[in-house]
Amino acid sequence: GSQAGPPSAGPPPAGPPPAGPVYHERQRRELCAVHALNNVLQQRLFTQEAADDICKRLAPDSRLNPHRSLLGTGNYDVNVIMAALQGLGLAAVWWDRRRPLSQLCLDHVQGLIVNLPSPVSLGLVSLPLRRRHWVALRQVDGTYYNLDSKLPAPAALGGEGELRSFLQDLLAQGPCEVLLVVTREVEESGSWLQAD
Image (tube, rainbow, N blue to C red; front, side, top):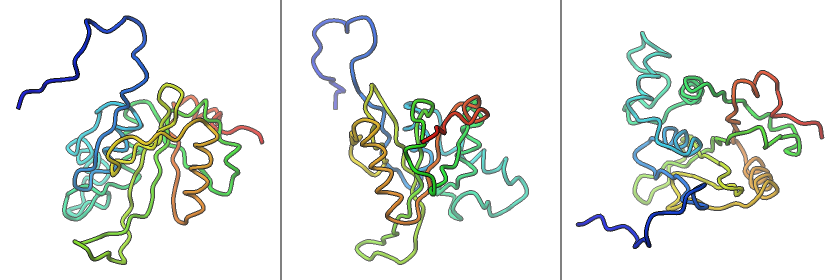
């Protein structure tokens, strides 16, 4: 079919782009780590091939790479995400879940990548196995979005208060980890943390 876009009335106005569209990749195979990276960075910077190259770099001598699924379909671990961010001059900082979220200095954080347990299902049968699922959270034009690749579209969370509530709910549900995506300067200075 033809790729007809929405009708436009002349060229777009100069200046900053209008609020939206928010960049959001949908889930393919087990590539949620790749989608989470691209969603948190708001552009397609990583591919499965790039993630596989990082896996090889992290474990050059292993036949069965420990940083991805045995089938080679993705399911990348945190080391791949950290190495991918480092390659861009960024860092991933683990959030200590024992800290109150009020100490999280969101002004100094580019985005968040959350690791959640994800039940495995084969057809209609939900297996007791737990896979890990990576989800990006990011502010775009003053609004925080849940950019989970399993969602059909970005889900607006709201402002800082709503984001903290969302994180609080996730952390209360059980084994979930939060990574802060920050610049190297912020990582070194520790300015992602603020006094209560």
